Image 1 (cartoon, helix red, strand yellow):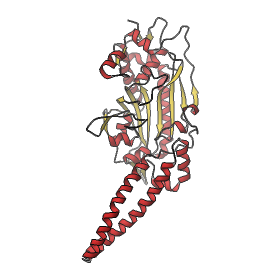
Image 2: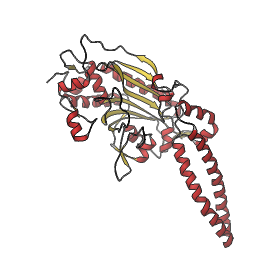
Image 3: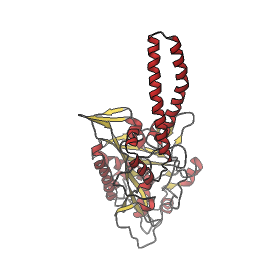
Image 4: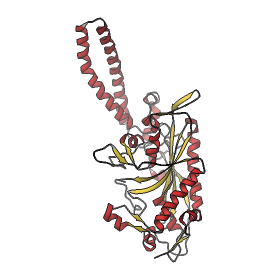
Length: 408
């Protein structure tokens, strides 16, 4: 969440940022109204409490009784205002970076780099057709067991996913990131604190009945939570998180959502960093560079997009996506993203730093190195041969133990 003092002192900037992200400014106006009322009541309550203490010291029972009655009427009102204030503050999005291109939606995202698309001298198949003929993906059995948009990976498909995870962790460990296998569950404080909603049109979280737990949509949630309510003095802290990810994807189905592209469960290797504010932008560029290097090493064609303000989401000040070329559908498809959330998540989760005479809230950044389901789409479709076989990228072969998958 944003600092209320920052909002008060920079109201025009905040109003413009909220509008550029496509959010209504009505909530901002109501927040300022409630904030003013609550501050007035806080001053009044503090004064009455001082007067009550003085009356107690003087043993003035009548005055004390009168003050107590007055407080009994005002304190519930203040409690109600505090609750509304917090809820309204949580609904105000982070302010976009001045470097983020202004635009209304994904149609105005900016392509900043584009690789050469893979060309074939035959009509390429999509990953569903390839997965069936290679006997490595089974949606039918998974739908029976778990419902639609779940899947089994088997045979070489299972080994390919494990290879992507192993290679991804090695890739980041060699760059100094700490590998972490995170819990697949998190308490509400942490998934809400990182911006993942359990309700509404953007709902992502599967909630666990009769508890405050939810299945994580990404290890970003659990990695951020590792240092909640902490003061860090050894920045930067960079993690390579491995987890299963679970997403409702409510209302998110579109033209290219079939197969592995948009599923309810997948596996991911995630970059996450806690840094000082001055290192924030540099770390964001490092995350983007890592993603590019990783997909170059796999030989997968991709392009890089910078998200415009209207497609940034609530948390991010700046965001980049990598989209891989997916021949089966003849389009680019998102495979990774990296976001700088500045101190927005850290303020929610109370994560601070102290370095010499500098202190404050840390900046947090996240970036997907590899989401295995979408990487598998890109590998199958870009490395297919006319006979239906699929070559394994050279970088993965020492992890898979085979160099090709052949039709069964």
